[in-house]
Image 1 (tube, rainbow, N blue to C red):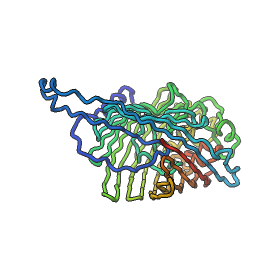
Image 2: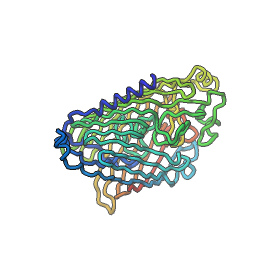
Image 3: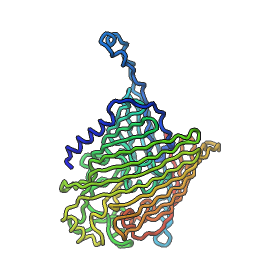
Image 4: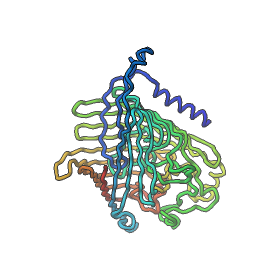
Length: 474
């Protein structure tokens, strides 16, 4: 699709969501009060709307009207500091990962600011991770306008309206929806939100994925997973091959000219999410919704494009202390590789699948292959227990389960994750304690095969990891 036509269509889409019109009086649909565990939630400081419609009915009245109320800048500074203790058990396959790949380490420091000036609003957050996980990068940063309590507009790097938000999971590890780019994803573009009555309607146009600088190229230093161009594929071969363990982070350059390149990136993506909340009074709520997205994948070497798309059906409920999240999603990605690039891959990669059977996604400074077609099942059950034990005010046990299946290559194995844990809240301190039992989970997998887990998942072995994440939020 021609880029100019795409851009014009995006502007019309956004304008359609923002055109003035009658708005049904609304009390915001109840949401899941997720603590700021991994990405602090959006905080908007609303300014009262000026009601000067009557004063503007004629020139005389307008001239004698009292001046508008003076607006002031309101800013709220937020941040967090987190530490992590990770212990992995891989049996006889390799040495248990403790201090060599885990142990008690610095996790992240975040600093952000949100606020308003009249109807103008903004929200931003900078993340500081260890250099090996991407260093410093912008997680989100947008400016917008709050028309009223039901209608908002954002421009910049914002959370893509897709699926259950802010998270489809409850654990620190996330569900598999995150690792295929369908949970807590942030991209650069325009988003409009409209909430008449119990409806939640969001639409967005994203010109490209978020990136930390101009002409970012193969930059994996980002928070959310995107299709990212690379100059060398992650290492290929069966689990345990020598080439899998060479190079920084378990990645090597595969020899063979164009077989070392995957010049594919995301562009011109449209999103639409529609959900409705059923209010159950003091008991809670049930929120049912559907989401869809469609965009382009672009070959940066040739300018050729093809499409990618995803859709999801989701349910989120709160019933007293009980929380439930269920999501079903399917995704298809069609990388526009040239015949020469496909042939070079087939001749040099030494695998029994094609170059367009996968895409390379990246985040936290690492690339990984993701099956070009897949289905994701995601669920989370939690229960909030108020306590009064010193500074501890709440404990929330949870169980997350996710499955990635129906991959486009029959020989590729599913990804399955069970996560049993609990969140402990003590004032500004949040502590996640997780037992992760999984096969093909990127954060619970030997580094040698990390690049393949969301595609081939060759060894298909169950592994166990225990993690404690402690963070203070301000």
